[in-house]
Length: 296
Ligand code: NAP
Image 1: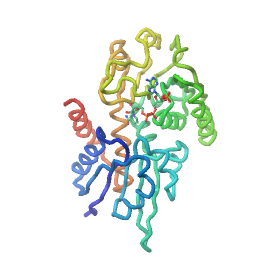
Image 2 (image 1 turned 45 degrees about the horizontal axis):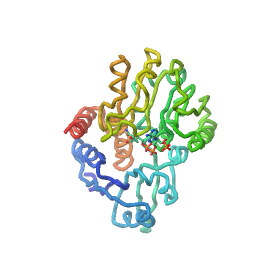
Image 3 (image 1 turned 180 degrees about the vertical axis):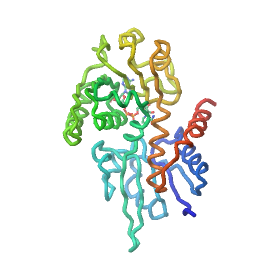
């Protein structure tokens, strides 16, 4: 019989987080006993907070906005993916025989993103040119995953290139470390006039997210210039179908929302904490549970 595990998520704010529901459903599905609590902490309360939570017996934490980068300095060990991405979304607390505590930092967003890709999209990446809208935290996880998968080229389209320059320079280092041929470019989103050279498009900006669901990060006419076979992925899952995805569906394109990435990053954290893998048979009930929560 597995021990009762104390788990949770740290971030600010945490009002809309679906992680407690996801982990409750995983524990229920696997007959495991534990709790998954929300620790809403603003940046000024982060220092010392992780050690204190560890001392209270926590086994693991998910980390979300705005702490994914700042917690890195408090880790005793970082796994290679977290090091590459420069961000931690999962912490594992290990109690040492002498009573000490070690904190290891992981990044399951990268694996979560890759596992969410349909097989034909994944296998075509070495011949794909992917357009990413935005250059924030999730764009970095997506970039790291795409480079790991040997994607041919990535172009970032942003509103302020001067602010986003570090994503391509960090990407060059990741590319060298992973020995990947990925070519990286950065453009101003307003300068995009023709998308015919892209294999797929990923929105990593919050444009279109609840409550501003009428917003769309690209004009419909511009989206139409994508090749017929191009896929469109929006990392947003609230709503499940954004304006961007609605347009893509109307244009008969493969359209993907952010729900599976959310589920797979959660599964990645769960497997680290519990030391057991989640059977694929559990996926339909996880999707159903989160979809229901998102549609009420
Ligand atoms: P972030 O670090 O704040 O980055 C947001 C990016 O979007 C930045 O490049 C920002 O540009 C750009 N942006 C923001 N508002 C914009 C606007 N009005 N027009 C154009 N660009 C704009 O946020 P994040 O953590 O990457 O999250 C972004 C989205 O991804 C959110 O909707 C989040 O829910 C979703 N997400 C989903 C998952 C999942 O598992 N499905 C995981 C992580 C994130 P500036 O730098 O110029 O502000």
